[in-house]
Image 1 (cartoon, chains in turn brown, red, yellow, cyan):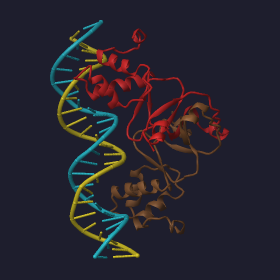
Image 2: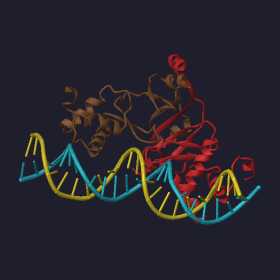
Image 3: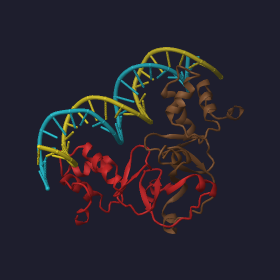
Image 4: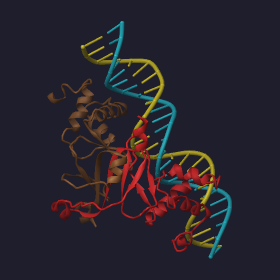
Length: 132
Length: 132
DNA sequence: GTACGTGCAAAGGTTTTGCATTACA
DNA sequence: TGTAATGCAAAACCTTTGCACGTAC
């Protein structure tokens, strides 16, 4: 985890465990997923620490908070601009890389300072398709 | 409200009030917004009735449930395919109509049965821009 | 009378907060 | 010693649920 050497906040063992769990993770885990995973290593880990760390990481731009799932927040360590394909049946989320041409009407570009965008594709994943 | 004559479920006064509040509403109100608004008319209105009605309307395709706001669900009576522009400062949501070319990689189109998409544009609205 | 809707309160799930304790420079 | 993080429990918030009561065909 040398890359986090200069991350700008204390790298406690708990935070390292969270970072390590998130590293390269494409499952878009929820706070609870993360809590469960790092609890195996740190039995005293608390939700407060998980949320505190996630908030800090998000505020510093190391992770992205996803509002895709109405039931709970999910977190994505992939901060490169990308989009998501969501299975409406099992809620699985798959990354979508690719360029899309998203030119807003000029009127809106005049009014708003646009900072980004995110596309959600909805569908049914192969696993759920097969199950029916 | 003649248009709801054959809506397929009982049009109680409470439901009519909710429908009437939603009609043409572009504010993307939350359940609480709706509850507050119709409570003025029906002081005994309960959240159970609001959620029950919203669920029914959503299941029958009369409204869309938006997961845009991490804090709460919002509801949109505009069922025509459209997208949204969200002010990251005040959370205001503006409709975006327009066609965007969203062709997924062929690989994903083979695997998934794609059913729809939704674009979120992020930015800062004119009001918030001025306030700073 | 039956089926459905309403309304209240309680419960459920996720996230936040207060505060005492702990760790580290 | 001082600053920041941890961990526990409680609280807050949104949403769902159970159930008794009402209402309408």
